[in-house]
Length: 294
Image (tube, rainbow, N blue to C red; front, side, top):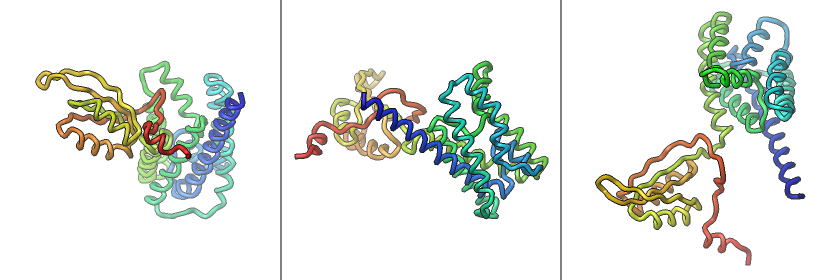
């Protein structure tokens, strides 16, 4: 019981830290890099940036007010947990926008604003998503629309952003629209990397003559277990097929193990978009015994 409570508290604390750090980074990126250079974000934040440029209303106020309807819609479909996480991250984000608005811009160079603003904004949004919240209601609406249409969430969000960038081009010049589009692509890639973790997963399929020996070597050196299947080649005959999931950082070591064990092995490496189930790296029995205190 105590372990369960501690685990719940740890998850809550991690979520709180992700939401807070993400909101800080995103607000800093907007006010210190993107807003001074008139480079827009997408979605509701982008619309808020356009309105704030044309009116005296503060960006932080606009962002929070325009997100309220989408927060209500998301709560009805995703529950109170979404309301708490998204409401906290949106409110903190809006407050921080007003706080950072009084600081001196970090740079006056548009290209530097695109690169550093896009990276920091993507990192911030990615952390917020990992914490279970969101900073922009566009994704919530896109998710609901995608359930009733043949369009994916990404396609819907991209279409909304294109409209926003087109409006920016008409109002502020097409160079601003192009800078904004470039920022979007940087942010999008950064979000994916931060949300899914820095150690991107790879699946490795190995067709070899002696699967047991190679699987044992992989386990001893990387701590990764393999699924061993039986395969039959049209010409080569019976072979062992190994399937293993590793991180991107472990891939060079995996290549070295395969090369040393069987230079004639046939290997394919694929990106893994999601892992469901146990993917915990374990020490082999001998290494685990060596690490025990004496």
